[in-house]
Image (cartoon, rainbow, N blue to C red):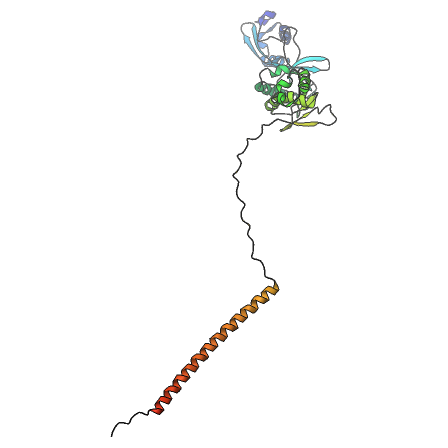
Length: 328
């Protein structure tokens, strides 16, 4: 029941982990009964190998050990000075296998001395960036040559092959032929882009749709800052003064003209009378009142005189013709 020969260790799941590296873990168990091999300890030792994400160790009686390995999946190359290794989504730094071939962008800004949590945070940022730009345009990651993860608030990527004036939505209509030729000449030129820390899909789409026009209007474009919501800053890393370039937005639809209305008449107050006019008006009013009073007085006097005359005539008639006394 002792573990004597290397063939008694059965290994599955390894593609980039050498079998010799696994057997080194069990070197202390040579000539030991498989019942006495500490399986949990050996599992932890296996998972300490950088390429091993998790391992399962089992006894297979009477005298065998079965090992199943799940390897890590690299998502980028990692450059540290002149050394080039691989790195997975959790920030685990992996040695480059001699036989396997990978096609990834290169990332920088991560080192073995950095805390594992910091490496993992940066690689999550990169993985999110890679996923979103692929969602914006299939094959977008093929145009990314290098990504700088030193600043977790500003992912910076070097891109190539974004195209010239033809990539811009309105470039051909708004630029001169000489500017268009200049933009086309930069089609394969490397471009450093500041993407910030999120919304990578929208930013990448805006970049691809407008880079042709930016190159045609701003001349040579070596870098673009896409961290702002409504504009891009061209050449922020090389020009003395960064120049904002707003995104092209369609003109608003024309509105129907409102029917003309005749102007409302002005309200004017009655003209004010001057003091002299007021005095004249008052005098005329008083004169009319006096004249009216005089007319009323004369009429009453004439009426009273007529009554007196009629009364005097009746008295005179009675005196001239006394009434006859009745006979006694």
